[in-house]
Image (cartoon, rainbow, N blue to C red; front, side):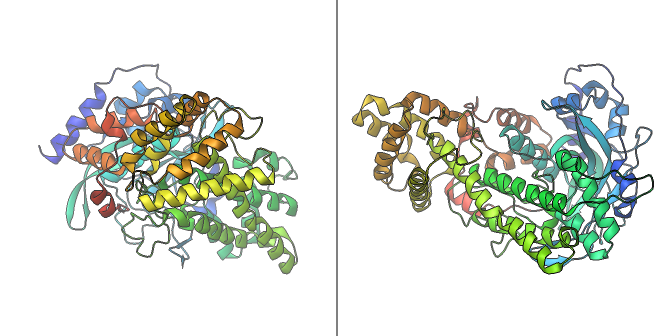
Length: 559
């Protein structure tokens, strides 16, 4: 099957999905372009030879108030490709800077992306302002010699993995749609089918956005940027901003700027702990890939860890392991220090005192991350705090839940021993936690039954079948101290530990099939990822890759 006929077939498959809902014409605002024109280059998306809709997140479209049926039609495709935008939309390429692998790059920006505008997203907490942007929309003045294009496989990967992260309850940008463009994209001398991703994000404000503004030395622009960020992400803090006279410049009180920095630090600490709890490795944690709003953004060389090893790296460009699974907290703190440097003038008029305040805020990352990590691991291991109900989900506990020092120290020791044993045994991170539920369910049936359950559930994942036996004795004793019936603990463990993640081999198989003209494997995996805590209909979606394959697995940015 030729490339073009393959993509036509994929488009036909989407068109065959039953339409639902009434036409709702999308509306877009131009908040960023209006408020911060110094950071926005007006630009238009490239016109494509044969655009065709491949995937559509229908619930997300409905939450935006947009009819999925309309989006699938010709007008919808024209809108999603940036060719037919509603009145008031002002597409722009955003300017930012950043540290990439620790090296300063003074001007980066949207080299192949466009912010179309802002929309209202319905959420359980009420309507929320979000960005709607294109990725792979063609070259811009910020392309730095690149072609501004995107290949199909990386866009389908981002759509798949971001959907998985959303279903896991982890803050993330989301892919509203992936479209084929009909444009051939050349990567490493190989022709590939081109694609376009429509991304919805809380915002695209990055650490690198603040770095670029700080590098300009424009104090007024810095205050305007921070005021914009506050109103978008921290309305409670923004309420303390003084009124701005017409044509005036917003003032940001020093205490508000400091509270904002602390809020960003807290969001990132929790986010990184959540990543690590599900084995997610971002792969390219440059400062331009850290979002102020606390969402996971830019899924280029991401992967999920299978055999537990804190040094796990899959990115082809991370030769030194800078962004390994276990390094992610350290790098996040480093990035936040770079953010703190940008707002020093807003924290205090005395530079020395400003540095002290910023240092205090950034140092808050490590204890915040440890609290979030301990809470996640206690949920993953069923370690219910005294007087608490079993975890209702992986993120049910957000802090130490009133544990006294003795309990905290005991739990930390139990968790540390568990991790050491998993690493020595190269146990699959997802499966070994999931199968603890089977052991917990047998605890009340006696030691013989518990040992048999452990052998059946856990031993196949270990190099040495009895490697966890000593730890399990201590774990069972800790469960008893929690006072929760064992079968309730087992149910809580199933709620806290996913059965299905976006396993690297399954993702690659789905992408390979898409390149051959079939989205069926992609759709099947996508469906399984929507219910990560349920056993999948296809057991392969929960199976780890062969060890040799997993060791050799390498991811690429796709740029």
